[in-house]
Amino acid sequence: MTIGGRGAATMFGSRIAMPREAALLSAAVGPCLFGTAFLATACLPSTPVWNAVYRVLPAGVLLIALCPALPRGVWWMRSILLGALNFGGFFALQALAAHRLPGAVVATISAAQCLVVPMLLTVLGQRVGSRDFWVPPIGLAGVALLVLEGEAAFDTLGVGASAWLAILSATGMVLTRRWGAPPGVHPLGATAWQMIAGGLLLLPIAAVVDGAPPRLSIGQLSATIWLSAGATALAFALFFGGLYRGVPATTASRLMLLAPVVATTLGWTIAHQSLRPAQLAGILLVLTAQLVGLARPGEPTPSPSNKAAAVRRWMAQTRVPVPMEWKARPR
Image (tube, rainbow, N blue to C red):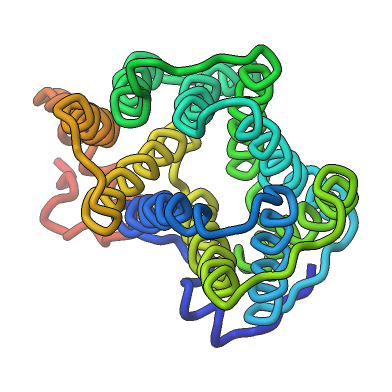
């Protein structure tokens, strides 16, 4: 890929190493913006695949305008594959699942991607800590309390689509973190081509499933603009930006659980929906999973026998000159 758009790249950060806290914040804001999509989507026409096209394609065009880039070599295939996983296949399966199941059930099953990610990493031979296996079920239980009602209908095809939704989301997240962005290319450019590839893959599916493109009212157009610019372009730029800058895929998958929390909170504050005690418990569980998952394990205190060696290694790495009086004097 070649790259331009230096101003936009500076606005979203460069490929210079970002502090851990800043990268985590970037990755966490993305799912919070995803959570705003639930209210906005309720205003759209009943053409879910076309709604996804209107959301993804303009977002990719917006990012490519801010930060021009062009795939080269193997990155053509990688962009198409990641676009299919993260956007095309994701939104197509989401539309199918939402047509067969209540949205709450789809949200709960697809949130299982936080369980799939550590399994995929293990299969790929990457070392995964035990905490990456036992913390996600806490957050997943919180999502279930947040969105599931007492009586939820189940459909075999819908459940299967939701399960594949979780698998595609997890796979896309792992590969995005594993491959990163091409050398010298800003994450915005890499993310833009994923969106464009995914949006183009959705076009024929939308024509078959939904028929002709819908006409949007002023209110629907306003909701679509926010979905595309805010809940997709900006959200994925921040979320993938955190992945590209070192946030582990396991951590990113847990951060995705923040989206239902934001959606529930907005429904309570803006749409005046009731907030049940079970939902409050669910929010607490999701936040607990985030805090426990982000906590760093304590480092062992060095013993006196290796303190001197640790100091020498640190000085060698930082090229700190050793004072003459520290050197052994000849006898």
